[in-house]
Length: 398
Image (cartoon, rainbow, N blue to C red; front, top):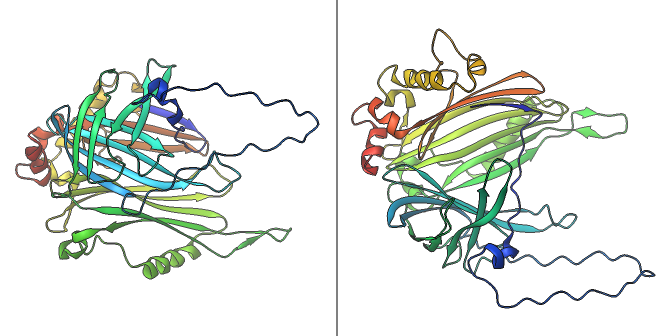
């Protein structure tokens, strides 16, 4: 599929309608009284409405990444839930921190993914409700319940009821936190600013900004010698490295170094590492993305293409691209010698397969994107016997 985007890509999560529990939620409240209209006060100045105080924030133990194993509708799954805090846009101009949550899972036997929903402004000590979009057609969608948990979020147990997409009847969820064949971690986001280097006539100046994400191992995994190279540096060393990067940026430039973990199971850890430079005053940005695959038993980094028989991954990509008849005129942008080049693709290992993403800036205003998704069912015949990824699928029973 190919998208043509104008301007800088951006997105924002829609706020969750937690107040609509009576209409779509897990538990309906008792009775509701209609609000009484206030008498007119034309002679009084308009007063700013009072904001409802947000619920308390989750504890440090609740925040971050949580990995669960168990069942959904009696079928084995692996689930991941992330809790974080950020400034509330809806509370502007007040500064209010609020908690947010999102979760996903996949069925081990089929590698099909599922969505546990989103939540925000939830009470960290009360049972959890999450919501998601229900797409009725291309133009109509609505918020519907996804997970009705029996515990607060971020705890060792997560049980309750789950509403599969497109279904009105919930199924039972029984999950427990477990990191047996993975690692427990958190992602630390830190920022540094440089001194102003470009001055204007009014005395103001622009400076560069460095944003970096670090992978920080937690618990017993911090003591494993094989994972010592994976652990992030201490805070002072991280700050020195960011400040050393600042002189390389000119003017008001945002340098963003981002890590996203995409697979954490079967003794394997996969993550993407994005380097992005965004100069101020232009919509164009430079981005470099690398996918890393690590063997958690040895700490050794594995090359993704070496998990497959020679040439087989590129032939599969080419075969799927030839079958893509919807956007053939755009597919040829990366076509070379009758094949889709593997070296030009950004490969991402995900729980349900591998994504190959092709993207290119034609101009400052236009970005071309084309991607192919390869399922584990299609990839398994191509894997080398006894390779780490082959072991992953064998453990899943695929």
